[in-house]
Image (cartoon, rainbow, N blue to C red):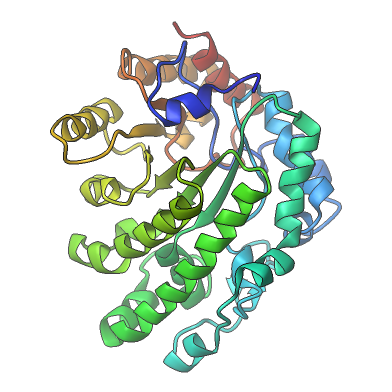
Length: 353
């Protein structure tokens, strides 16, 4: 591969510089994306492999990122399960939230072949991306982890309090586990198929697992992360899997136990200290070697360009001399970010020495 920096960094191999990409990098901050998006709905774009591949590649062509993450959404595998996904309002929602044991039991247990057929557009998108960029940079596949997917299904969309999912968790933990088990089976196969169709590495988003207490994380998030990662590795032993949680401070030890080889870190913590903590645990034989990814505050990209450069350099200096580091944001890039600031972030990392 012409540029394999990310693949090296994911396995903590020495790199000439940190590789860099941005979560949600194919998106609304780019005028080129908006031009395509104006022609079709979000879900139509997800299901159009040629156009989805085109917007996936835009950040590589415009900003020069070191990896292409395929354009899609974490919720698309839920549609063939019977969850009733709807993007008509511009934001994902489930018209009929999944809140009862009967609704959970009615969800389909999809086989690998059923997933490949119903989500064929996802796998076609990967092939289209590979055709566009040949073997220049890695292509990343992703999925949502069970707790985070369940939160959308039960809440009916996004949430601030997560009251409905926690209500079900506390009132009927058996039903909650049934849902998480179904989701973990589907997501493991969904990701395995992404590797089969050419993805070079994977990222598992358990964005909202940080709303759990440590005890509840151990029961309702960690086992299902572990199950997915173990199942992937049973078929692809050398697959690189990054785990992202938005708010790692309270759960970093559990993230380290997930089986992931890279942890994606939000902006609320000191990344250098997190890396030293992980390396120390590795040195003591308590955890496998792990890379870290992050953790620039996406909103810092709204400031003046000079400030973006200064803050990026500050982040990089905190990681100097540490192998296994991928520069990224602490969450997805937001639509208001000026393209020149996104490019300043990328260029600063690429020119750092």
